[in-house]
Amino acid sequence: MQGLNEAWEAIRFGGVMIYPLLGLGVIALYIMIDKAYVYMRYVRIQAPLLELVETYGFSWGDLEKQVKSLEERHYFGRFFRPILENRAKPAWWVESRAADEAQQIEKSMSRGLWVLETVVTAAPLLGLLGTITGMMHAFKLIGGAGLVDPTGVTAGVAQALIATALGLFIALICLFAFNFFSRLQSQTLDEMERLGTRLIDHIRMDQQGDGSEAA
Image 1: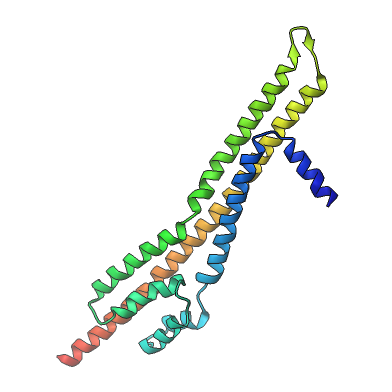
Image 2: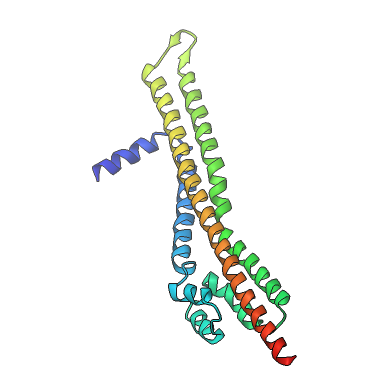
């Protein structure tokens, strides 16, 4: 506990720019926790559902049961439902509906990433602003007759360094988080495209079979 208090006092010594930096850090932390929760609960696809889609000639009834077991907000469930609802229509129509839904899912998954990207740029700039104000405070203590308060000069320099270090630290964390979640988003969309292709192929196969029977 004492160590935390000492760390907080050291951070507070960084000057007024510390508070907006901490605010950015709290916002970024909230975004990261929210993204991690969403990916763990609404993105992970169950193995039986994945195996079913990969099976040649699977039953649409079995697929509907698997999709109904997913939560309403589950991204793969949202992607599969338009395909299931329109599977009796031409394949090009189903592809169009699936593409529209995938676009909406991409927007949902991208929500909040711009905040992390903004913090990556803004945090170092705020830290630099804190550096400038700290150095200006230190230079004010140097009068025409020379150095007036050596302790005050070193305190100003320390204030500048704390603000810069905190800004860079927050920016680095947000940069890693932004790249990580962007990579997860790309992988999820690629997987949706791959599984969607499997379902469209199955629809085409069913329609060709119906056409052969009619002939």
